[in-house]
Image (cartoon, rainbow over all chains, first blue to last red):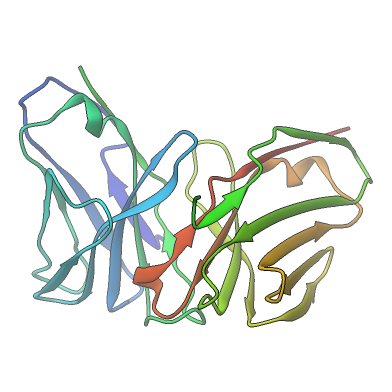
Amino acid sequence: NAGVTQTPKFRILKIGQSMTLQCTQDMNHNYMYWYRQDPGMGLKLIYYSVGAGITDKGEVPNGYNVSRSTTEDFPLRLELAAPSQTSVYFCASSYGTGGRNTIYFGEGSWLTVV
Amino acid sequence: QKEVEQDPGPLSVPEGAIVSLNCTYSNSAFQYFMWYRQYSRKGPELLMYTYSSGNKEDGRFTAQVDKSSKYISLFIRDSQPSDSATYLCAMSDGGNEKLTFGTGTRLTIIP
């Protein structure tokens, strides 16, 4: 049972470089999310998608872009990486919205910008 | 004031003890309340879900919500070393895209 799969697990980027964090889910979930988790700050929503072709900003979208061309995939693009983007990134998905719909998280991607 | 406050710990208790984890919040519109467990180097996983006020029990875990005090708790009975993890509270007034997480409490159960 794969669930939500994220790649890469670890990455070191230089300031100004760009990269894409990949996320795929095999549960046929409509909703997908990208969070970042910083020490002492909790999980913050970056972007989310309610279905293929539809994306929307979360709480901390600056410096990121997303696309959702298929139900399964929801990549997160970092343009012009900055040290402030050093964080742990989690992709997640849920069948629907509302508190009754469990959010399933991937295992995380550790990103360091130097 | 943060919308959701959670004591970061760390909290260390002996095996078999009862553990109490708590969160307070300021938004009276919150009506969905969750507890997530996060093992080291892993993603969070849903542990308990409660709608509105009241108690919910699942095995050794009990979630309590007191909306009048804006206070939620998670109790772990007969704690085990496998319960050692970070526990995150989360709450929403509607959709999952509005979920607000606490900062997490790091719990260690000592054998």
